[in-house]
Length: 115
Length: 152
Image (tube, rainbow over all chains, first blue to last red; front, side, top):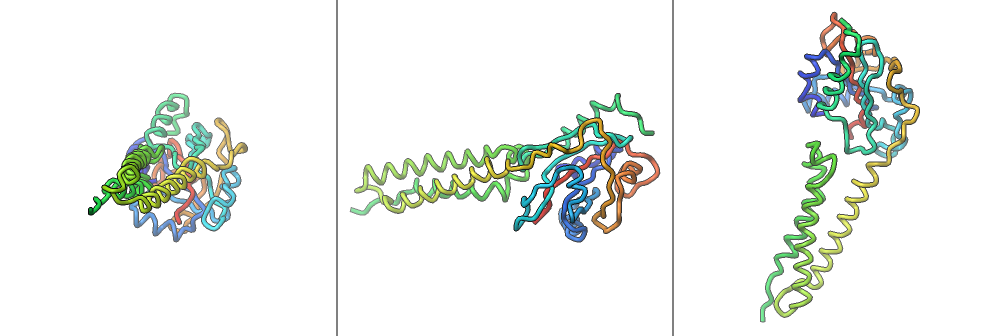
Protein backbone atom coordinates (compact mmCIF):
# COMPACT_ATOMS: atom_id res chain seq x y z
CA UNK A 1 0.00 0.00 0.00
CA UNK A 2 2.87 2.27 0.89
CA UNK A 3 4.67 1.58 -2.36
CA UNK A 4 1.60 2.56 -4.41
CA UNK A 5 1.35 5.83 -2.51
CA UNK A 6 5.00 6.50 -3.32
CA UNK A 7 4.38 5.95 -7.04
CA UNK A 8 0.94 7.59 -7.13
CA UNK A 9 2.06 10.42 -9.44
CA UNK A 10 3.05 7.80 -12.04
CA UNK A 11 -0.48 6.42 -11.92
CA UNK A 12 -1.98 9.92 -12.01
CA UNK A 13 0.00 10.91 -15.12
CA UNK A 14 -1.36 7.80 -16.83
CA UNK A 15 -4.87 8.58 -15.52
CA UNK A 16 -5.00 5.20 -13.83
CA UNK A 17 -7.12 5.29 -10.71
CA UNK A 18 -5.66 3.40 -7.73
CA UNK A 19 -8.30 1.85 -5.48
CA UNK A 20 -7.80 -0.42 -2.46
CA UNK A 21 -10.55 -2.71 -1.16
CA UNK A 22 -10.81 -4.59 2.15
CA UNK A 23 -13.34 -5.58 4.81
CA UNK A 24 -12.13 -2.76 7.09
CA UNK A 25 -14.80 -0.21 8.08
CA UNK A 26 -14.52 3.28 6.47
CA UNK A 27 -13.71 4.85 9.84
CA UNK A 28 -10.87 2.42 10.50
CA UNK A 29 -9.51 2.99 6.99
CA UNK A 30 -9.83 6.79 7.24
CA UNK A 31 -7.73 6.86 10.41
CA UNK A 32 -5.24 4.50 8.89
CA UNK A 33 -4.92 6.62 5.74
CA UNK A 34 -4.43 9.76 7.80
CA UNK A 35 -1.78 8.13 9.92
CA UNK A 36 0.19 6.78 6.97
CA UNK A 37 -0.51 9.63 4.54
CA UNK A 38 -2.38 7.54 1.94
CA UNK A 39 -4.35 9.78 -0.44
CA UNK A 40 -5.83 7.32 -2.92
CA UNK A 41 -9.27 5.74 -2.63
CA UNK A 42 -9.92 3.01 -0.07
CA UNK A 43 -13.21 1.16 -0.29
CA UNK A 44 -14.89 -0.72 2.50
CA UNK A 45 -16.59 -4.09 1.92
CA UNK A 46 -17.48 -5.07 5.51
CA UNK A 47 -19.71 -8.01 4.51
CA UNK A 48 -17.26 -9.13 1.82
CA UNK A 49 -20.01 -9.05 -0.83
CA UNK A 50 -17.77 -7.69 -3.59
CA UNK A 51 -14.84 -9.76 -2.34
CA UNK A 52 -17.06 -12.86 -2.71
CA UNK A 53 -18.22 -11.71 -6.18
CA UNK A 54 -14.56 -11.63 -7.22
CA UNK A 55 -13.98 -15.02 -5.51
CA UNK A 56 -11.31 -13.54 -3.25
CA UNK A 57 -12.75 -14.52 0.13
CA UNK A 58 -10.20 -15.95 2.54
CA UNK A 59 -12.39 -17.69 5.08
CA UNK A 60 -11.07 -17.35 8.58
CA UNK A 61 -7.96 -15.59 7.31
CA UNK A 62 -8.37 -12.56 9.53
CA UNK A 63 -8.08 -11.86 13.24
CA UNK A 64 -10.14 -14.27 15.39
CA UNK A 65 -11.13 -16.26 12.33
CA UNK A 66 -12.76 -13.33 10.53
CA UNK A 67 -13.39 -13.64 6.79
CA UNK A 68 -11.18 -11.25 4.83
CA UNK A 69 -9.97 -10.64 1.29
CA UNK A 70 -6.95 -12.52 -0.02
CA UNK A 71 -4.41 -10.19 -1.65
CA UNK A 72 -5.12 -9.68 -5.38
CA UNK A 73 -4.71 -6.95 -7.98
CA UNK A 74 -6.83 -6.28 -11.09
CA UNK A 75 -6.04 -3.71 -13.75
CA UNK A 76 -9.20 -2.61 -15.55
CA UNK A 77 -9.13 -0.52 -18.72
CA UNK A 78 -11.37 2.43 -19.57
CA UNK A 79 -14.04 0.13 -21.01
CA UNK A 80 -14.28 -1.80 -17.75
CA UNK A 81 -12.46 -4.83 -19.14
CA UNK A 82 -9.92 -6.68 -16.99
CA UNK A 83 -6.53 -6.45 -18.68
CA UNK A 84 -4.09 -7.68 -16.05
CA UNK A 85 -4.47 -9.87 -12.95
CA UNK A 86 -2.14 -10.75 -10.12
CA UNK A 87 -3.23 -13.53 -7.77
CA UNK A 88 -0.30 -14.05 -5.43
CA UNK A 89 0.24 -17.40 -3.74
CA UNK A 90 1.84 -15.81 -0.68
CA UNK A 91 0.57 -13.11 1.66
CA UNK A 92 4.02 -11.53 1.74
CA UNK A 93 4.45 -11.25 -2.04
CA UNK A 94 2.32 -8.45 -3.50
CA UNK A 95 2.25 -6.69 -6.83
CA UNK A 96 4.73 -3.83 -7.01
CA UNK A 97 3.78 -0.51 -8.58
CA UNK A 98 6.49 -0.91 -11.24
CA UNK A 99 4.92 -4.22 -12.32
CA UNK A 100 1.49 -2.64 -12.73
CA UNK A 101 2.84 0.45 -14.52
CA UNK A 102 4.72 -1.79 -16.94
CA UNK A 103 1.62 -3.94 -17.50
CA UNK A 104 -0.39 -0.79 -18.24
CA UNK A 105 2.23 0.64 -20.61
CA UNK A 106 2.49 -2.70 -22.41
CA UNK A 107 -1.22 -3.02 -23.05
CA UNK A 108 -1.86 0.60 -23.93
CA UNK A 109 -1.68 0.18 -27.73
CA UNK A 110 -4.40 -2.48 -27.62
CA UNK A 111 -6.64 -0.61 -25.20
CA UNK A 112 -9.13 1.95 -26.45
CA UNK A 113 -7.86 5.48 -25.75
CA UNK A 114 -10.74 6.27 -23.40
CA UNK A 115 -10.38 9.98 -24.20
CA UNK B 1 40.25 -21.32 37.98
CA UNK B 2 37.75 -18.75 36.85
CA UNK B 3 36.05 -19.75 33.63
CA UNK B 4 35.61 -17.35 30.72
CA UNK B 5 32.33 -15.71 29.83
CA UNK B 6 31.03 -17.46 26.70
CA UNK B 7 30.49 -14.47 24.44
CA UNK B 8 29.59 -16.45 21.28
CA UNK B 9 26.53 -17.99 22.91
CA UNK B 10 24.97 -14.66 23.78
CA UNK B 11 25.91 -12.96 20.51
CA UNK B 12 24.42 -15.87 18.56
CA UNK B 13 21.24 -15.86 20.61
CA UNK B 14 20.81 -12.09 20.20
CA UNK B 15 21.20 -12.38 16.43
CA UNK B 16 18.52 -15.07 16.31
CA UNK B 17 16.17 -12.90 18.40
CA UNK B 18 16.92 -9.96 16.11
CA UNK B 19 16.12 -12.16 13.11
CA UNK B 20 12.78 -13.10 14.69
CA UNK B 21 11.56 -9.60 15.47
CA UNK B 22 13.04 -7.64 12.57
CA UNK B 23 10.83 -9.14 9.85
CA UNK B 24 7.56 -7.73 11.12
CA UNK B 25 9.03 -4.56 12.57
CA UNK B 26 11.40 -3.60 9.77
CA UNK B 27 12.10 -5.83 6.77
CA UNK B 28 8.42 -6.20 5.85
CA UNK B 29 8.47 -2.57 4.70
CA UNK B 30 10.72 -3.24 1.73
CA UNK B 31 9.54 -5.57 -1.05
CA UNK B 32 13.08 -6.88 -1.55
CA UNK B 33 13.34 -8.15 2.03
CA UNK B 34 9.62 -8.98 2.35
CA UNK B 35 9.05 -11.18 -0.71
CA UNK B 36 11.76 -13.53 0.51
CA UNK B 37 13.13 -13.14 4.07
CA UNK B 38 16.78 -13.53 3.09
CA UNK B 39 17.90 -10.82 5.53
CA UNK B 40 16.31 -12.74 8.40
CA UNK B 41 17.73 -16.05 7.20
CA UNK B 42 21.16 -14.43 7.13
CA UNK B 43 20.72 -13.29 10.74
CA UNK B 44 19.59 -16.81 11.73
CA UNK B 45 22.53 -18.39 9.97
CA UNK B 46 25.09 -16.09 11.60
CA UNK B 47 23.41 -16.56 14.97
CA UNK B 48 23.40 -20.34 14.60
CA UNK B 49 27.11 -20.38 13.68
CA UNK B 50 27.97 -18.34 16.78
CA UNK B 51 25.75 -20.49 18.98
CA UNK B 52 27.39 -23.59 17.58
CA UNK B 53 30.83 -22.18 18.21
CA UNK B 54 29.86 -21.27 21.77
CA UNK B 55 28.41 -24.70 22.45
CA UNK B 56 31.51 -26.47 21.12
CA UNK B 57 33.66 -24.28 23.39
CA UNK B 58 31.60 -25.02 26.49
CA UNK B 59 31.46 -28.77 25.87
CA UNK B 60 35.02 -29.32 24.62
CA UNK B 61 36.71 -26.95 27.06
CA UNK B 62 34.37 -26.81 30.07
CA UNK B 63 37.34 -25.87 32.26
CA UNK B 64 37.79 -22.70 30.17
CA UNK B 65 34.27 -21.73 29.07
CA UNK B 66 30.95 -21.47 30.85
CA UNK B 67 27.61 -22.21 29.26
CA UNK B 68 26.96 -25.96 29.00
CA UNK B 69 23.46 -25.70 30.41
CA UNK B 70 22.65 -22.10 29.51
CA UNK B 71 24.06 -22.58 26.02
CA UNK B 72 21.90 -25.64 25.46
CA UNK B 73 18.83 -23.74 26.57
CA UNK B 74 19.65 -20.76 24.33
CA UNK B 75 20.25 -23.07 21.38
CA UNK B 76 16.96 -24.92 21.94
CA UNK B 77 15.01 -21.66 22.24
CA UNK B 78 16.69 -20.36 19.08
CA UNK B 79 15.88 -23.51 17.18
CA UNK B 80 12.24 -23.33 18.25
CA UNK B 81 12.10 -19.66 17.23
CA UNK B 82 13.57 -20.32 13.80
CA UNK B 83 11.15 -23.21 13.35
CA UNK B 84 8.20 -21.03 14.28
CA UNK B 85 9.39 -18.30 11.90
CA UNK B 86 9.83 -20.75 9.04
CA UNK B 87 6.41 -22.30 9.64
CA UNK B 88 4.86 -18.83 9.47
CA UNK B 89 6.81 -17.48 6.51
CA UNK B 90 7.10 -20.55 4.35
CA UNK B 91 3.83 -22.29 5.12
CA UNK B 92 1.14 -20.14 6.78
CA UNK B 93 1.45 -17.20 4.39
CA UNK B 94 0.86 -19.56 1.47
CA UNK B 95 -2.46 -20.89 2.77
CA UNK B 96 -4.51 -18.74 0.42
CA UNK B 97 -7.71 -19.78 -1.37
CA UNK B 98 -7.18 -20.65 -5.04
CA UNK B 99 -9.79 -18.13 -6.26
CA UNK B 100 -10.49 -20.30 -9.29
CA UNK B 101 -13.74 -18.46 -10.00
CA UNK B 102 -12.14 -14.99 -9.91
CA UNK B 103 -12.88 -12.75 -12.92
CA UNK B 104 -10.59 -13.56 -15.85
CA UNK B 105 -8.60 -11.54 -18.36
CA UNK B 106 -10.81 -10.03 -21.03
CA UNK B 107 -13.95 -10.19 -18.88
CA UNK B 108 -15.84 -7.12 -17.77
CA UNK B 109 -15.00 -6.36 -14.15
CA UNK B 110 -18.09 -7.00 -11.99
CA UNK B 111 -19.57 -3.66 -10.96
CA UNK B 112 -19.96 -2.70 -7.32
CA UNK B 113 -21.00 0.05 -4.95
CA UNK B 114 -18.87 0.46 -1.82
CA UNK B 115 -18.22 3.21 0.73
CA UNK B 116 -14.91 5.02 0.53
CA UNK B 117 -12.88 6.08 3.57
CA UNK B 118 -15.13 9.14 3.98
CA UNK B 119 -18.27 7.01 3.98
CA UNK B 120 -19.28 8.12 0.47
CA UNK B 121 -20.70 5.38 -1.80
CA UNK B 122 -18.61 4.82 -4.92
CA UNK B 123 -19.33 2.63 -7.96
CA UNK B 124 -16.82 1.11 -10.35
CA UNK B 125 -18.45 3.13 -13.17
CA UNK B 126 -17.76 6.32 -11.20
CA UNK B 127 -14.15 5.30 -10.65
CA UNK B 128 -13.73 4.81 -14.40
CA UNK B 129 -15.19 8.29 -14.90
CA UNK B 130 -12.60 10.10 -12.79
CA UNK B 131 -8.85 9.58 -13.22
CA UNK B 132 -7.77 10.38 -9.65
CA UNK B 133 -9.32 10.89 -6.25
CA UNK B 134 -11.05 14.26 -6.11
CA UNK B 135 -11.09 14.92 -9.86
CA UNK B 136 -14.03 14.36 -12.19
CA UNK B 137 -14.73 15.16 -15.79
CA UNK B 138 -12.02 13.42 -17.78
CA UNK B 139 -12.33 9.65 -18.03
CA UNK B 140 -9.74 7.43 -16.44
CA UNK B 141 -7.55 5.29 -18.68
CA UNK B 142 -7.83 2.53 -16.14
CA UNK B 143 -8.59 1.50 -12.60
CA UNK B 144 -6.28 -0.61 -10.46
CA UNK B 145 -8.20 -2.60 -7.85
CA UNK B 146 -5.98 -3.69 -4.97
CA UNK B 147 -7.70 -6.19 -2.71
CA UNK B 148 -5.88 -6.31 0.62
CA UNK B 149 -6.27 -8.15 3.90
CA UNK B 150 -6.98 -5.12 6.05
CA UNK B 151 -5.20 -3.77 9.09
CA UNK B 152 -5.44 -5.17 12.58
